[in-house]
Amino acid sequence: MLETHFKIKMLTTGYQNWTLPTRLGHMLYEAETKYGQRDNTYSLLGVEFDLDANKPYIWYQSGAKYLVIRLTSHAIDDEMIAFYQLAHECIHALAPLDPNLAIPDNVIEEGLATVFSENYMLQNFNKPCMTHEQKYIDAAAEVRKLLAVNDDAIGLLRAKQPCYKRLVSNDFTTAFPGIDAGLVQALLSPF
Image 1 (tube, helix red, strand yellow):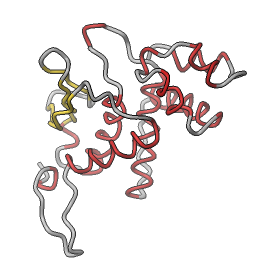
Image 2: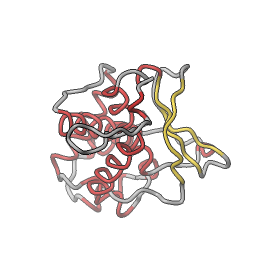
Image 3: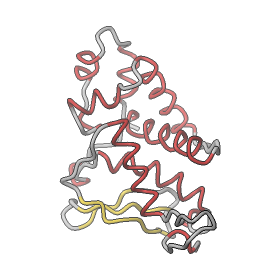
């Protein structure tokens, strides 16, 4: 495991390194600034690694009001993979929903998480990190179409309905009259 994931050390620049928790703080700030405030009724406890998981995910603890971001074993020894996975899960942490409700993820949420993680890595590390899974690529393409309609689209939608999984087509047509119905249907489709 990389020491820099959790250990602070002084750099030759006179600054300290970024750990996973401090990087998460930066990601949350960026995501909230662009896409709206995180639902603070859920407490974000931190980051850990699930050695058996093939994808990162949000784990809900104790009645679903406590969240932990779990990264995969691939991220243990690779800072860039860790940051990419963390950025993706950061978007899910903005608008969590009790998993006992069994509402499936939708394209807008997974697409936004993919777009945000790709943009974050490019802007902060000049690294073009992208997924190779087609369903994430397709979801990100749909979100990019929405952002082409209005770059602040996600923030505007979340101002009315903060939870991605509870968005309905009327939320889109009210915010963006004349928006393509096919795009709305694609964004609201189960992932």
